[in-house]
Image 1 (tube, rainbow, N blue to C red):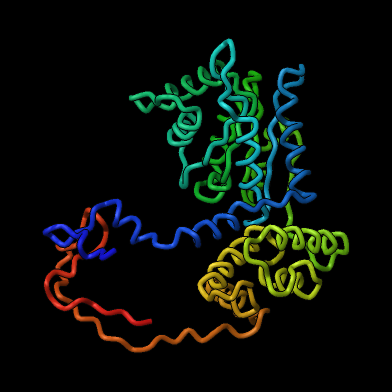
Image 2: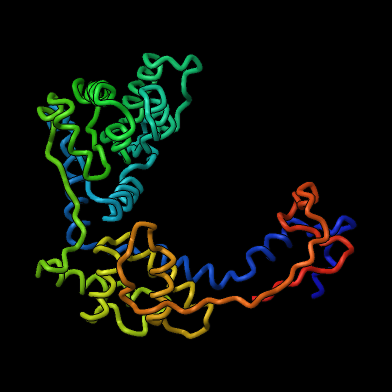
Amino acid sequence: MNLELLRDENGNYPADIAEIIANSDPEKKEVLRQVGIIVVEYDQYHDAWEWLEDMLLEVNTGLESTAGLLYGVSGVGKSTILRRFTKKYGGPFQTADGLVRPVVRVSTPANPNLENLYKAMIQALDADAADSGKVSDLRKIVLTQIAGQKVKLFIFDEFTHVVEDRTEKFATKTVRALKELLSDKHCQCVFAGTELLFKVHSIYSQFRRRSGGDMQLFPFDWDEPDDRTEWLEVMAAIQSSLPIKCEEPLGQELMARKIHQSTDGTMDHVMKLLFRATSYAYDSGSGVISFTHLADAFERLRRGDEVRSNPFGPPSKRRRTVSVVHHVNDDPDDDDEKSNLRSTGKGPKPRFKK
């Protein structure tokens, strides 16, 4: 098919054709999707899941409502666990009494205040916020929805924002306000975030009395024998799930060690590394993920302050040949709003050479 015949009088593609052109390799997208959905349920994953279930099952047992902290360094899998837990227990489920939502996960706003925090809770409850914006009105809506939807557990993800982004006085005020949800046995609360979240105990000492115990997640420690053994098992499980396999199997000790060195033993970093390496392997058409693909992925994901050497060896030299592009019209008003592709007009067509 000659795609040029599909342009209209203004040189624009129809929206559906433009989308196909802009996303011209659905096979690659499917390969990367298979990497993106991999979740490995290892020991800490199960421990955190059981801890959350214990918090949930304590509701209506006669015990007073409690709260707990789920924290750890970025990348250890907190958000993955919380998303999957909410998906299983959150609903909403249709009952004879209407829709119920046993577990609600709230994304704590950056630079939070009580108004936008309550609005985030209302949004997670799929309810309408009050027009007035008064904290007292918003709180009433939250309490009404908790009772009506029979909420048993509120999970506040990224709650470290309350500790990091605001003053200690504000953090105390916020935690005290949320503790009121516990005081009247409205529901349980879980606050999730980075390792700085444990400061909540010192910021607001009364919180400790209502604490049901905390759960801290850690990266895998290569020097700890049990961690190393499990890491090898996790790497072998990931290797078997990859749509494009690593040339050197991930479950072999040398390869597993290199993956650990490049990711600091955190699962999120592992999957981002393999996602990028899979993309490079697909583009090369090699059929396997090589050390070079992993080296390129490591360089792509390297953070600015890192000076450590690449554990997979030197990356490929991605030099590009020089090319000249003839710009017909640099007027931004000529950008195609229908297709997000720029029309070349009637002048010479631009040529791109990799």
